[in-house]
View (cartoon, rainbow, N blue to C red):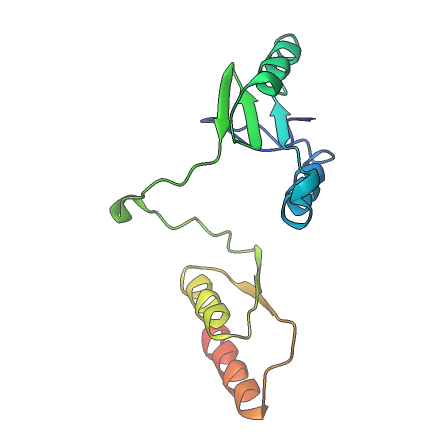
Amino acid sequence: MTRGAVAAGQKPALVAVAQAPVWGLGRTIALEHPEIWGGLIDVDPGDAARSPRALRDELRAATDDDQVALRDGTRLVARLARLDPGSFRAPALAGEGVYVVTGGLGALGLRAAEWLAAHGARFVVLAGRRAAPNEAAQAAIAAWVRGSYG
C-alpha cells in the first residue's frame, strides 16, 4: 500500500516521489515471482479520513485487478482503450529540455530522435547498450546529427 505514489484520475496530483519506487519494485516482483505476488493499492493522498475504509473494502473485493488506485472515492485500474487517431496530439517539447532516447542507435531509436528534432527538441541524447555496429553506421549517425543540429 502506498499513498499518492502514482498519478491517477482525471486530475492527477503530484506523485509522492519517495513512495513511487514501491510500484516499480512491486511490478518487478509480479513478473519475476508471481507465486508470492499480492498486488498494489495506492490510496488517495488527499483523503486520509476515507483511506482506511477504502483500503479495507479493496482488500475484501473479489477482483483480479492487482494494481489499484483509489481517488475521490473511485476505484481506478489500468485498462487499454481504443484511441481515435485523429484525437492524438503530439506533446509540446521544451526547446531547452534534454531528451534521452534509449535504444537510440537502432532503427527505431534514430526515427524517434529524428521526430524529436523535427518537433523542436534541441538536445537529444542517443543511448544504447552497444556502440554503433560499424564505422559506416557511426558516420551515418554523425551525419544525421550534423544535419539535424547544424
